[in-house]
Length: 379
Image (cartoon, rainbow, N blue to C red; front, top):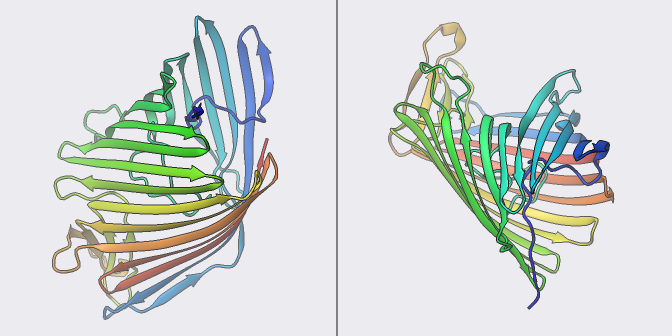
């Protein structure tokens, strides 16, 4: 049986697009510029249903809007050092204002060394080794359940690709706290990842796993893992991702998964989870080199809940925070997305996507609906 090794790609790790413009290439030094212009037509709405006294059903529906979808410019440089060793650098600048303002964001900035046959060592603002490991994330905008840390402002990473020509990969990232002050909150983290990808006479298989441990403070840690697998054959692909995250010592994650508004004197309440379990299943059919259709379903459970309540601002009441007790100790989210993509040219992508997510918690039901038409031009 003929065996073809499919080398894994490290996202943005000194890699540039196939159509990158080479602006300098001499004496082992190479400088390239590439990028993407991303535009998005967006139509979204959110509906709230409450069975709790004092809260009223509500909905927010927006007109169709034209948005900048994180357009970016990439700069990469490499220098051959001899004996299979080279140095590289990468910078990515994003146009971060979705309404086409003048805001810019330094999304990535790192440098490092590449050792032929061994791997890559990099330092700076970059993705971790857990980035890009999802197997079921076939949409452009509406899927993804990975709870593992995938980026940081100060990251050191090492990743080995296609180890001993087997299709296996492994890596380690260390994320520094943004502040070196010992008195500040400690947000250091370690990220581990490994996986395997290969193709056997047209049958593609992929398996990835990742784990992260973040020390948020002296008494609070956050742990997460991801398991992802995919099988593909004759244009069909089927992927499954499962990811879980947990905060220790009855703490919660910093981002609220559900927010309610104060109505008629009733307190405004935000809900935070101390544990998240997420499953996503996706399928894709590559019709030809330019066209594809895909669908994704996901199910997420939030537990170990913490509620943060405050009265309307006019009342001047302080914020009250505490664990949720009683029967309403968890919340569930389910959602789906359907889409199609078509390449007008190797450098021009278009796509259409529809998605809906329903979040249920106790007497609260929140429904988010989205429709997207996207255009991406690579240069």
